[in-house]
Image (cartoon, rainbow, N blue to C red; front, top):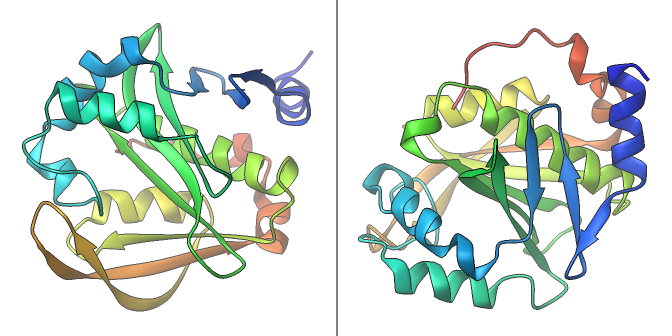
Length: 204
């Protein structure tokens, strides 16, 4: 089975863990977080750079914060969160959420020791495939701080188009900051979804 066929098989028949599909890529596993992931999540998320580029992550971020996150997520129908696993280790988190409007909202972060390996792009592409193929949505959106070019590049490599400048409330800063808003619609995704043809470059 070639890589493209193998990817399609994973997209159309995802396994499930606790009601949340387990998504795979060439290198990564995306699955629902478990309480035994809390120490790894806390260690990686206790990073001011992550908090200051995320809406809801506090700083400092301790074990209790990770445990609260894990017990609270994936309990409703409007948001799903995943830990990103590489070679058995948690390297970051990602998710999809309905926050109003027709588009799903994409989010992701990668822990500092694991950046520069393309994990954010690879995980984002798998979530995008899931959103369009399994969930049947027509668009995916995302917002990144205007001071975060690395995250912006992840979105651009996934085919997102810039739409506008907005504001996002950052919990760790207790203030709102300007963000670039991006959107990827089904038609554009369908034209580029053979991700293997896109040149791989280092990313977040």
